[in-house]
Image 1 (cartoon, rainbow, N blue to C red):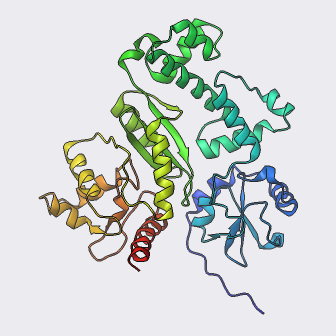
Image 2 (image 1 turned 45 degrees about the vertical axis):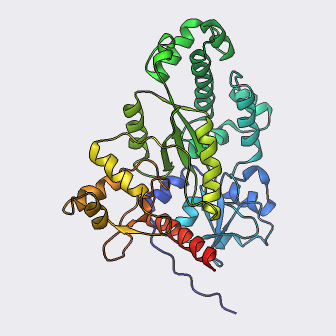
Image 3 (image 1 turned 90 degrees about the vertical axis):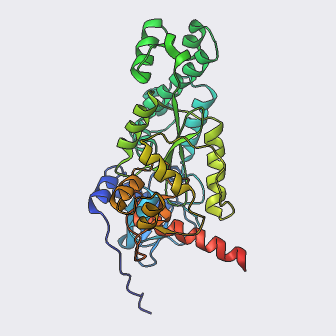
Length: 371
């Protein structure tokens, strides 16, 4: 029986090539998926052209022929190329971390002051280049930068809580005052002695069915939630640093923990209203637009014109559209619910496929509840 012809949607070739640069050699990936090597889970995904499904390297289904396989650095890349997640290996059901990465992160969380050198990684049987690629792709920084950020984040909180500076330096794994002060000032833009008057933006990465997202929070609430492959991400991070006058450091807090839980419920279709507090400073006009977005009900849409009209400025459709696109807290401030007047999707910073997915998710949840 002849396999049905699959028509692939157009993709952004530049994004695809960019993702390919982080992949292991093709021969290595081929060996990995044919042997179902779990060490490669999270490092790449395979798309099977004959079924339009993408899988983990360890998928228990029959291994496809190499000529029918396409490789992707992230699950998001596979989605954007037109593949759907495999129902057997569920490549998007949980955080796609290889075992060695999970162990490294757990070790750093247990003791942020620990120093793990490239030689230490080799002794554990992990290639430093593989670790570097993985952390750059998933977290936007090298493993060494990740551990350094955790050390400084811990020091920041210790000093803010009143711990003596000498103890904070020792607990953070630094050998000298000068080394600690230099690293601290470079990361935060101010000295350890000025901590009492400052706050930092804590950032974390969260897995979703639409790919990884980066979240940021201050002590007051969530200030950032963006897809990690969004082109404006670097600008949004810089805006957050400028707006709050502080650096972004890796870590967690009560708001991020709560957000992670609520996002999981949202994507399951069981949560319609987020309760985690939000912080979204901006111009008076921007804040008015974002506040109106928060009023758009779950599962419904409004047009850009409707949004402008509700502000008393029906002629400001373009300004409303630009402000909608500058929203730094995706999903929670639901800019995905704003569409063109004729019903077309319009734009979306995370990509139109994600926008359609979110709208379908909400409308399906409403429909199933009403049955």
